[in-house]
Every structure is written in C-alpha cells, then in structure tokens.
Image 1: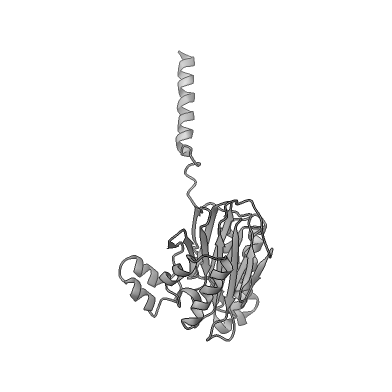
Image 2: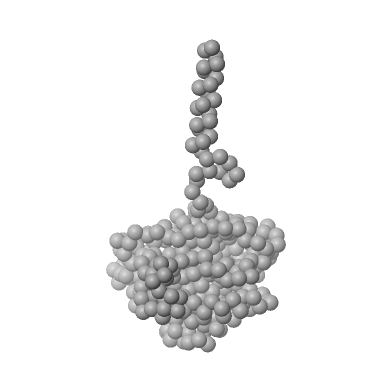
Length: 297
C-alpha cells in the first residue's frame, strides 16, 4: 500500500501561514505551495495554486500543464483585485501512477527522494543555486548567501515572467519515499538531519511530525510544510483514513492512500524500446522504392 502523511505549521516568527498543501491519493496527486508576497496575500496565491492544479489533474490534464494553468489563475486574480498585486507562490507537486512518478516545481519548494539515501530531485529557481551548480559558491556559502531567497521563477507576481517549471520523472521501488517541503524546513534543518529522521522506523506521520518539530527547534523562522509519500509493495492497493487532505496550518494529517499517475517528460524521439520515428519512416520509404524497382524489372 502507498502511504502518505502531511503537516504544516506557521512557525515561531510568523503570525499567519502562507503555505498550502494537498493530498489527493485518488488522483495520485500531492503538492506543497509556499505563498509569497506577505501583505499581498501570499496565502491566497498558494490556495489558488492548490485548487487549480487539483482541478487540472482531475480533468485528465498533465501536471506541467496544470502548473502553467495555476500561474495564469494567480495572474487573473491579481487583475481582478489590484490589492493582490505582487502576490505569488512556489509549488512542488508529485503525480504518481503505480511506481512511476512525475515531479514538477517552480521556486524553492523542494522534492527529495529517499531510497536509503537522500537525493534532491528539484533544483531551486534562484541565482544562488545556479552559482552553486557552476562551482562559484560552495554549499556552505550558498546556504548563507543573502540572495538565496530571491527567486527567478514563481507562479503569479508578474506577467513579464517567462515561466519554465522544472520537470522530471522516474520510477520508485517499494519502500522509497518522496518528500515535498517548503523552504521553512530546508532553511532550518540540514540534509544530514533530514536523512536521520527519514531512516527511522515508523509511520510516515511520525516522520512528518519529527521533521516539523526539528524545524521549529532550529528556530522556526518561517512557515514549514511537509508532505511525505511512501511507495508500497502493491501500487493498486488502497488504504486510506482520509480521501482528501488539503489546507493551511495543520499540525499533522495522517492518511495513507494510493492509485497514482505519472506524466511524460522525456522527448518523444522514440517509443519505449522502439526505433526513432524518422528511422521507421525512412525504412518504409526505402521498402516502397525497392518494391517499385523490382516490379518495373
């Protein structure tokens, strides 16, 4: 059975929670959205993102398209009410079918894979991450850099932004876990500590609660939201104590569910295990030409 858990906390320094999360096991959809804009209603933006992506997947659309739709919906909300000017949201979303997964993200909310080791799947959309990738900054320098929260990709905020969501797919093994989180976790808790918590025995909710507690103990300077999904032995099984889980500032939603769905990211140059399309067309043309020459002879 695929199991999952989720939780969110406003933290120790903020008076409200701009994060949102969603758990829809019947759609194979989980996400975390971190509203940005403060007094410009970041919590409104993250709620729009959550609702729009769920509606897109429910209608049979792809996860990347649903994320792009969410961007447009946030911009439309700004146009409708200029008091919302400048609001936006990050997002990191997981879409599962069986053991195949599809992850899409915008901003600095992260996705990690735990398969005995912690591996970051997403890449933060900011200049500091690019400098780290190029070797200009060390990991320690990047973690302390004053510009690490200045995003170059976000849902909403401005129509001038050319949105390019991150997107990848892969296949889980039974027992593997996908962690989705806002930067309220990763700013406070370093990856070795996250690994220690994930490798513990116990249920997903126990790990989620421990991760949030670790962020609060480290300072809790921001809202913190965590969603954890663990692949089961039988992807078709269903065991759930809650069909839909979504919200803001919840301190632990314990649910387990399944029935998952994945999209495509790889270029469509060839089918799985097949020949590239151009080669197949060429072979047909050559075959027809040979037949015509033989027939003429």
